[in-house]
Length: 98
Image 1 (cartoon, rainbow, N blue to C red):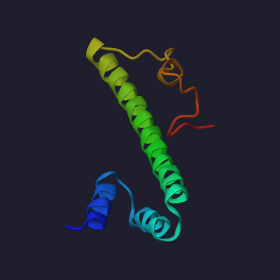
Image 2: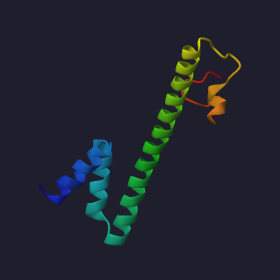
Image 3: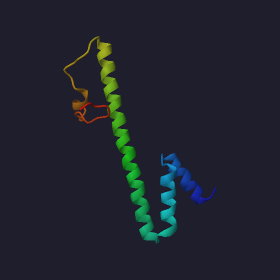
Image 4: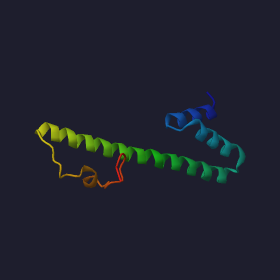
């Protein structure tokens, strides 16, 4: 397997879509080394930030589910408790109603 193919596969494994992979390859083919590296790093850093944001929201969703499971197991529901606010996501979490 060629290096370019390995890089493309690694990007797929990291959750990059084909558009991002093409952009990464295009940068690699047209920019001087130092500029290319910086531009590719920025592209990957942005994708990493998006993955980390998604991870944080998934963690928040798990915390919400864990709280509801806790309430069910203890035999009641605590209507006073705002799980989102307690987790640091007051009203702006996924599925919030404004």
